[in-house]
Length: 91
Length: 91
DNA sequence: ATTAAATATAATAATATTATTATATTGTTA
DNA sequence: TAACAATATAATAATATTATTATATTTAAT
Image (cartoon, rainbow over all chains, first blue to last red; front, side, top):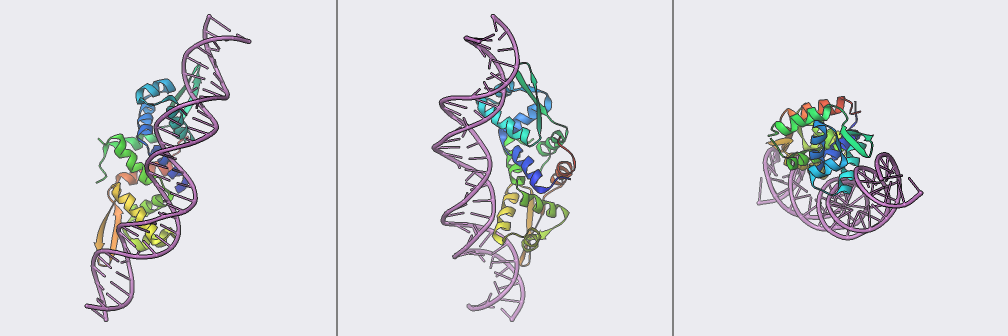
């Protein structure tokens, strides 16, 4: 069972529109940094910074493929959370 | 379907250890401000500020009961999310 | 109407996050 | 090994968040 500080760290990593878009892509499938950049239309360093935040929160993982670094969601829990938070109403 | 900005706002509201503790209480049942304060051991104005953030994000709702203002979770989606995020591993 | 209890707001200093720019690192190919 | 492509890091100025303190509202009871 995670504590409040750990969970706060995860939510903080998700508390940014670009990172949500990024995670949403990485849930669908692996992306390298360049692909992610095209998808988000922001600068390369900014993409790397956002990826770093998500990785440090444990939300995504990476592997090297030749010249590229490929990122993807670390497991299914974020996918489950996205289904709830994007679909349901918090009225 | 919510957009990225809206969801980011919700996650930002959840991205604080004290607010997580607060929401966790309000999921269990209604609390007035004073009760919440005792539970969290922080100042009264700070409790009110955190409650405001959560309310503006739509995560909690309030009603007045005589002299008190009672807060509670607005629906079950946050409860579902908490079950996932607090219990499962994001390895 | 006053008083007291409960809650909310305002102002603010300290800290954290963000996007940008420039530069560094890493790995591949010629 | 030199040059290039892909990614990461550092520095930083602008903005946002936070806890604290003081004060204001709001409601109920006297």
